[in-house]
Amino acid sequence: MITDICFNDVLLESAKEVFETMIFMTVEQCPDCITVEGDSLLGSITFTGSIEGCMAICCDKECARTIACNMLAMEGDDSISDNEIRDAIGEIANMLLGSLKANLIKQDVGNLDVSIPCVVSGKELTSSLGEGSEEITMPIYIDESVAELTLQYRVVK
Image (cartoon, rainbow, N blue to C red; front, side):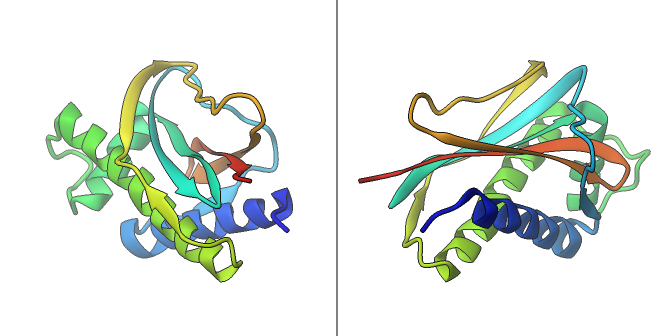
């Protein structure tokens, strides 16, 4: 049986795995419902299979820049383009879903087919899967920065 508790645990475990082993940043779940404010980036990626949905990460531009610098082994004061930052957030969404997919397969969810990531920028960004879907939004700290992980899904009958 697919449950929210299963997805909460798997979502956090997947984020920790990606950030701590590949980007060398810590991830912790926020104890409070903090939201990302101001100019931000939203990296999302969709999947289909026995469940279908969308997984997204949203963070402010400074957090996104730090993530990109860590991914590219750059120093904080190195020059990095907006395109490189957007590419990094798209790749993070891809890696997060890859880790989530590997962890869900262990839970006997079956195979998932994955799209290519999409990155948008703006303020108060959200995504939607539509009616009949479940949503988990998890505020997290990436090092000291606030970000949000969102998993929207529905079971395919």
